[in-house]
Length: 78
Image (cartoon, rainbow, N blue to C red):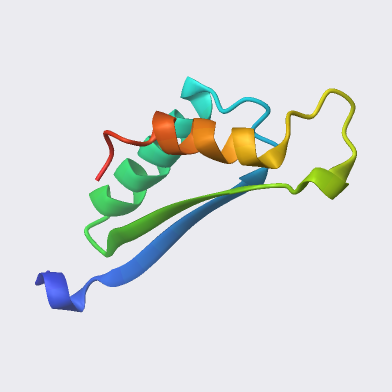
């Protein structure tokens, strides 16, 4: 299948990411590999959406710090 014929996919994960872990990142890799191996899809973006401070989970690190950790953890990804 030609690249222009592939269905474009955005992977999205929502959660507290308190903190983000290697398994959170691995989840994206597994989903990407599975979908792309079908030959029908191309992943165009992965999005990590951390809950806001209003979530009120006990021990929740401030959102700005969790977002910074996610950025650092994903720095080496395309």
